[in-house]
Image (cartoon, rainbow, N blue to C red; front, side, top):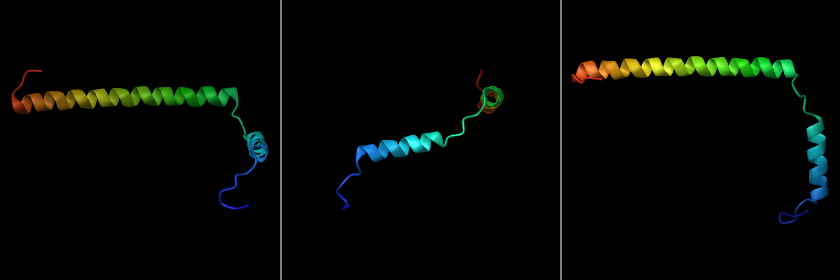
Length: 68
C-alpha cells in the first residue's frame, strides 16, 4: 500500500471493535469509590486554595496598608 492509499474503512471498524472488546470495565463499586475520592480531594484542594488566597490577600493588605 502506498502512502496516499488509505486502509479500507471496514478494517478500521473491525480493529476498533476488537480493541473495544479488550477494555476491562470497572465495577460500579469501584467507580463510586474513585468518584467519591476525586470529589473529596477536589473540595479539600479548593478549600486550601481559598485559604492561601485569603492569607495572601490579608498579607498584601497589611504590607501595603490597604483595608481589605
